[in-house]
Length: 104
Image (cartoon, rainbow, N blue to C red; front, top):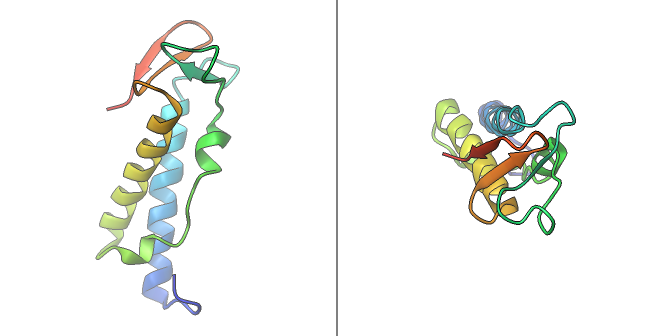
């Protein structure tokens, strides 16, 4: 993002961050009460993960590259999916109850 962002760039960045944050929280809503998710196939090697593992990889400064707030929001959601997918080998998680969740 430019050193002094314009009001429009700030709106785009806010939309990106909102999309990213919302998507991370949606994915981790599939965790059990403990808030933990593991890789579905290799839980001993990959996990547990919390929503903070997803939120902590938020790379701010990309929203301004979008043409609209809607595009920035969608881009943030896509990036959150990409980060979550990088945590699980086959893009599937298991919660502590044994329930599976596959990323779209």
